[in-house]
Image (cartoon, rainbow, N blue to C red; front, side, top):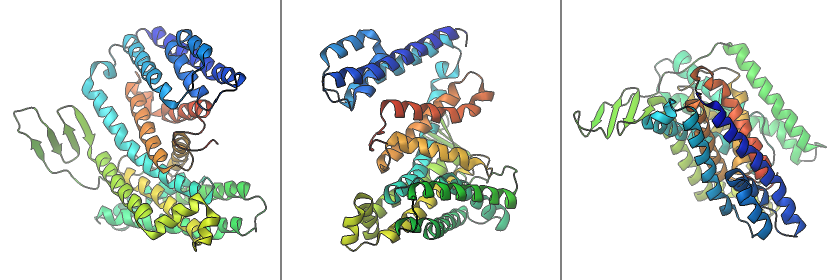
Length: 414
């Protein structure tokens, strides 16, 4: 950056006054016996956006706060950071190229859809079983590995759909068998401390799956070929501004937005799966039984639903959704037995951001994390280091959510 001091001074201003607003505002509201549920979030947003100019009136008048109070300050914060970044690095592609920004945001949404699908599996497990599976990322890794080996090694030339269905079936069965053997005893009274037990056994499954795959498949990265080729399309014509143009491996919209074929295909598969999942949960008896158990296990049991079977089904479905996410992305990224570790941490960030146990929150959180990662990697001045910063983005989001809104978007407080 040519004038990096401008940018970092602005960031420091936002952080310092946001912290002051987030810490002091709930104390003032508590001292006056007022509702403090939104005080940290709103105080931090107003402090970061306006500093003392906005905080002093807030502390003096102490109006009733709702999440809507944070919307306008949030927009102001984004605007302040964008302007400061543009002044600090005027030659950056995120400043000079609108098509580059549009492509980054579009690809962020595309990847975010798949992140949301992966997080939905973890949310489903948590809402039904009441445990967080630390092996979720390994199901994601297994799904990708299975698609690669089915389509490229075991049955070369086979239809990718067969490989994806095979990965879904195997990850579902792994989840079902594991839940029946290792998690079922938690609900029969055979385990004295079920919370700690669930952490240990899911950690154990994660280590087993990762090192089993490394021992059998090796530690070298693999990557599947793209599943399908786009047909050649050029709308409206070759000599006019192009509405849609496709080649075998790329799609271009409005002569500006570029979407690689593997990412588009992965997002399309994820959207289809999301629609099927919603139909299953809200239109079938089994799906309604799952939702009933998540809301009240005892009442569901009285109504004739077997909670033990629902636990098994939920863990299997959760593992399958993670496996499907990996199955779609193995054509996008290079795959290693260790990819599950980052996937697990990303899924935890997403469900905390969206709210523990909230399915809509998990999907929305996935979109936001995808956008955040795309914007971060695209705008970093040194592209050779951009990918190495991806794990840090999730930790930044997690820290902000836990400090400002522990309930996430739609969940309950941790």
